[in-house]
Every structure is written in structure tokens, then in C-alpha cells.
Image (cartoon, rainbow, N blue to C red; front, side, top):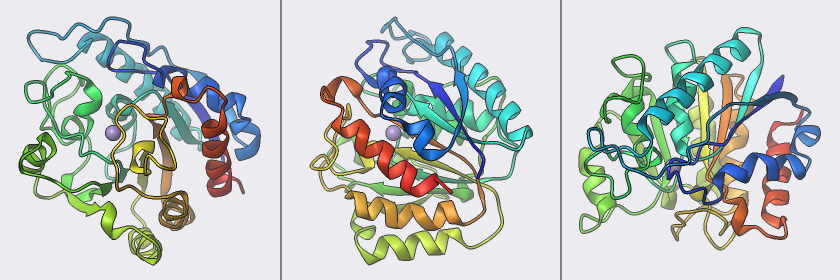
Length: 284
Ligand SMILES: [Mn+2]
């Protein structure tokens, strides 16, 4: 596959807490050469103001919208040129921009510990990375996207690897809000052979698909360098078993990798492992 790496160093907290340094850390680990990817450069996507917009409830809403616009333009150009974008976040707030740039009618394979289905009021933080799935299915705050309506049909969204949804906690309230057409596959059903089975079932078909990997889908025991670690996640072998059939399906438009917090990886060991796993999955 003809991969092109695009950096999207968007940290939607506006606090510069480390996700915005992930693209540089992954490049320093030799990601481009190991995947055999072209260099598509970077998108202007930094947010440096943590203020929550009073109207929408979203931190840096104008910057998030502008970053999304810039990401969308680059995605459209790359896909139009026959490339497969590998977009390096930043956090999950890059997803609306990416999907805004894709031709309509794709499946979304969304690997994440969290549902990312808050809105501008319900989110405890106001970070757009709490809301990316609600935004792209048209349940999120106004002001983030340039256009109305869903970017992806909720029927075509598969959320893979989320943790137990406890009604007493915010993720349980989030689960109650999620569009019922979205398919939820918890981490407990993606261990060992189940990961391979799920990947093979998803891979069937011909509809183009986007693969979104929030690295916090992994267990904090194998990847602690994320901002919102959740116990009970996948190990590296589960992730590879799930993703390999997806990559091999011939359906992938591209892939995004988010939430690696490079500040929590002082000796670079986690960047090395991420680069190794991506190369194992994506290199021809
Ligand atoms: Mn996420």
C-alpha cells in the first residue's frame, strides 16, 4: 500500500501535555522508513489556549474547526492522489477533520478505550477528544464542523475495545447517549482468538473503511504513555490480531493513530514499540 505520513499534532486540551509531540517521537523512532511511507508533512493544528468556549463548551473551538479544515484538505488531496494517509495525532480530536476529507460512504473501525461520545455540555473537560465520535455522527456540539449532518452513517461505525460501561460513572452515561446504530465490541471480546475472529469478520466486504487507533485501547500495563489510561485493555498481540485482517482487507482508505503521550516516554521505548507494530502491520 502507498502510505503517506501526515502529522496532526492537535492536543485538544490546549495544555500541551504531550500528545502534540507524538509525531516527532514516532518519526525519531524511524516510522517512515520502517513502514516505507512517503512524508506528507504536517498540518497546523496546535491549540495553545485551554479556555472552554462558553457557547459550545469546547476548548479552543475555533482552532479545532480550523485544524479540522486543514486536515480535511490534506486528506482529500492525498486520497485523491491514490495515497493511503497514516495520520499521526495528537489526540482523537483529529478524527472529524479526517472524516470530513474522505469521500462519503465508508465504514469506521474505531479502536478506543473510550466511546468519545460526550457533547459540549456533558464532557467533564471540554476537550474535543471527548466528543469526536459524537461529532462525526452528528450528535456533538455545533461549531466544530463546516458542514451539517453526519460524516459517517452510525450503522457503519464499529467501536472496538472499549472498557466496561458502568452506569454509575461518566462512561455509563455516555453509553446511554450513544447512537443505538453504532456497534459496540468491548475489550473483553477482543482477547486472543476472539481478536482474530472479529478482525476477519469485519474485513469481509468491499466498502472502503477508515481505521482509527486510539492507543489507549491497549492495556496500561503494555502502554502506559497515554493521557487517559484505562485498565482491562488489549495487549499488543490482540491489537495485531485484530488489525491485521483489517489492513489486509483491501478496504482501507487510511489510518489514524492517536493519544500517544510522548512526554510520558522519556527513553523512547514506547515510541519504538509503536513504530515496530505499525511497521509490522503496514509495511509491504
Ligand atoms: Mn479516543
